[in-house]
Length: 305
Image (cartoon, rainbow, N blue to C red; front, side, top):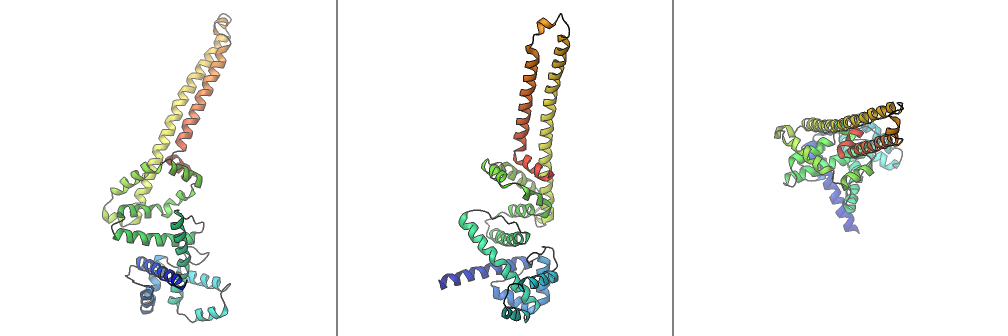
């Protein structure tokens, strides 16, 4: 049991060191290297942590300045930590308080990743802070895979772009809808479309997430515009059909008012026209529903809402 705990601590420490290394742009081999770096360069360490948004206090915004986040974290731990622990914490310099806080925040995400791997599923998080740390770890792992040649840098750039705040509305899709789209393989063609769009960017542009996000947003808007044109095309086509039916109905009504023509018209004509209109309307709604349930239709609805 002790060996298992030791192994877990080693894995967690390495994960935290890797996140620090990736986020701060330094080559840390272990958590001890991170602490030594922080001790030797406390001001630089704090500035880098603030710029990378590595320290997010419970209940705080991801964009909250480091000093405010540290004060919020202090108030949080005072509600449930022991007096002895708080006295030890108070003697720590600021950079080690931040170092300790980041380590504590990353720990639970390690367990989340472990469980998601065992269950073969992607975790869903309702708290922005947890999602932020999960994204940091995912970005760290993606960089490692890219360095090993197991992940294409264009694919990684596209993944990072889709998690941008400019595309935050993508997170509003219902789970049942996502499951249906995945089951129907609706994502395959759209993924290829996005990949082709990003593939047109130069390698230097791929390093700038804003450029990739802008291209992704443009391609999403283009796809949604295509969907809206198809929807309008369906509407125009059925409007013509409804108009023709209305003209026939008016003509039938006029003929019915002429006594000489009434015997030839019969009583079935109005019912036949009404049935035709009803059939056309059902087909129109079915075709629109089919479009709206496609991947692009779902994205168009999500963006509007």
